[in-house]
Amino acid sequence: MSAGSISLGRGKGAKKHSKKTAKKRAKKRTRARVSPEYNMLLTATLCLLALGAVMVFSASSTTRVLQNGGLSDSAFYLKRTLMFGAVALVIMHVTARIGLEKIRELTPLLLGGSVFLLVAVLGAGTEVNGATRWIGGGFLQIQPSELAKVALILYGADLLARKPKRTRSLDGMMPFLLVTAVSCGLIMLEPDMGTTMVIVFAVAATLVAAGARPADLGKIALVIGGLALLMSIVEPYRMARLTAFLHPTADPSGAGFQAAQAKVALGSGGIFGVGIGNGISKAFYLPEAHTDMITAVIGEELGLAGITAVVGLFGLFGYAGLKTAQKAKDNYSKLLVAGLTSLVLVQATINLFAVMGLAPLTGVPLPFVSYGNSSLMATLFAVGLILNVARGGSAKAARGSTTGAGKLRVVEGGRTPTKKKSQRSGARSAREAKGGRSGGGNGGARRTRHGGRRRASG
Image (tube, rainbow, N blue to C red):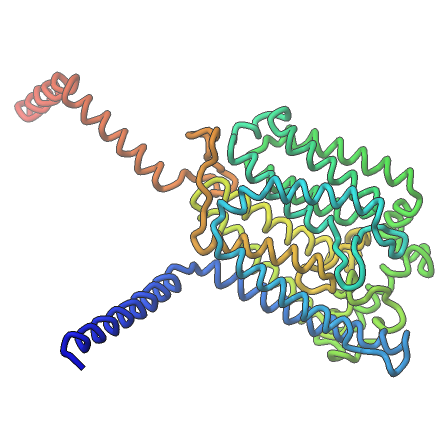
């Protein structure tokens, strides 16, 4: 073999080695850039998912055996949770690493698709327990309202980031409000009051983060409150739920049965619970224990300590999410993270309050924990977007967006960003310097004369 071929082989080897070294350094830099909020968000999410898998198996295995006999698959819901959870984690991983601009460009498609599915589910959906909320067949059933929740936050963040001045009037916010009203109207026809409540509160949080005036928010709240009261009067079962929430012992075997049994389950758990798998309420007294009422199962089997851990994990998630929104590079990222974090926290709060008897039971699952394939995938998609921003992702300003009006005081904690502070201080110092050169000469002379007089008289 010639010397030239040997040197060529060495050159190729050196190039490969240098490429590998460069990749390693790039990975190290990426890890170094990961913010503490990213780690907190990921830790809280994974811990809640792990807890959810355990509690779904505990809550569903007993009921499967009691309903279908000893030959039934007691791990049926656990297997489906693990399968769809794996797919949802892949979605979260991909969403956390792709460009945020692509998601912003796909927002009209996601919103239009969610509205189309909301219409389709009313005509071709599957009815379960008197509600038509799912479309599809077999294990590929989709709940369109879960996609609509995330799509509305994406749309609102994009719209309000393009023109932040929209939040200064009801007319400016009207496109966002109308799209939200249409989506909520379709969801109420299923009917699904719980998801509607989650959307309303999450949209309100997005508007607050965007700087909407309290007076305008009050007018919107009055309209929504009037519509909610009207719908409760029209549908007797909704009024029964409200009265059961206020007086659960008035009808303990009827409308107040679920609320009363949830309190019994929580109370019987004590401080540390009766142990995983040893709960009794899930088998005989709590309908849909692995979905809406899984918090009661946690309270019975893990006690106050388990409920406190769940609340602490959601608190960690909320803190890291809002901190990420505060540190985001652009208005779109700020509003997107604030809205999606509020979406998760609102849903968790409604579920926890309902089980504890502090809110009406509306069938809202506990994020990450309750069994629900569509809910899990939509929630982890939202978490992927939050992680994307926590990693430093941002979206470029869209065409037609206004500049100079993008200060979001609510998200930024009422403070002026550091860059703007430095620019203003620089401009102020420049004006003072200019004033010193032009009109400051006489002032300097006067100060010198006065100073001279003081020194002379002293």
